[in-house]
Length: 211
Image (cartoon, rainbow, N blue to C red; front, side, top):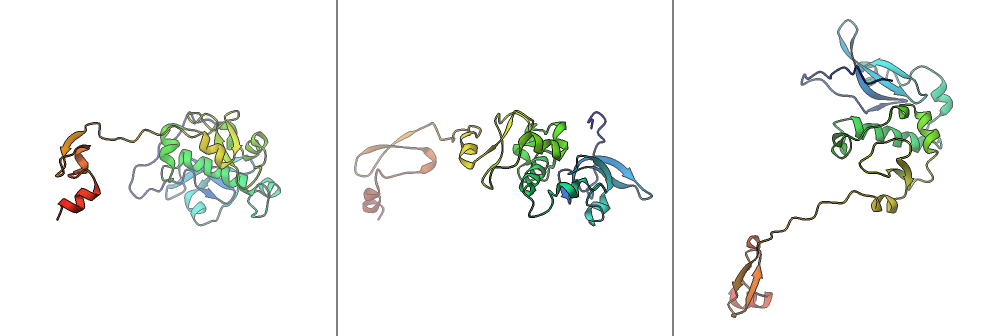
């Protein structure tokens, strides 16, 4: 699928963006314009079987359309709660959501930073063939280069410890760089930051001289 002719999202207040949301075996990937007599929003969705289909928004919201209509996604079985690929399918959907859905909780750390998903991984089966099954329930999808995209060669299954070791460096805590010298009631000179408003060199002096 090509993103050269992406249709701009409407700017009306009552318009709800569905990009990144999952409906059964479908995950919404882009706005496809308006359709029907009442010009309802239509959405292009990627099915778990690897095909894409355009579905009206009300059909998705009312659960009238849950797949592309093929039987391949049923054979794959990834949407079944007890299927071994169920966790991989959930991770695949979450990957798309945090990169495309502006309403997602962690969109600012992914989609807003320019992190995208490669075109090949619109197909769930291609994603599975590249990444393989998830080794365990403690493993999750990790990008080797935190500034890179979700694509083959930059993703792996990692444990929480491996993920923590591969995090982006956090910005250092900002502390006031200006120190002031104050003289306690006992005569001892001590240093303090302006915002702390310390008047005593120790808690003992504070207890003695604050009465």
